[in-house]
Length: 68
Image (cartoon, rainbow, N blue to C red; front, side, top):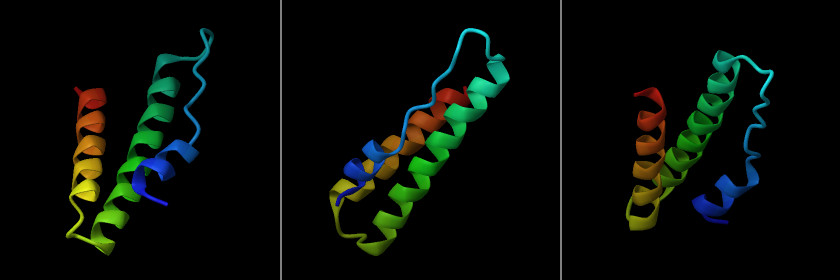
């Protein structure tokens, strides 16, 4: 199973209209940080795989986008 497939197993957070914005943001951050750590573990297992480096960079970019 590759990193992309592992990411697909993680459920997207369900944010409701009645939910506070801070709680929704927290759920999104938890998901993105989890995805980052999965990608990091895969990269560290085999650093020669360009796809793993790419997935790690995508995770960082998504996380940075949410934090901006």
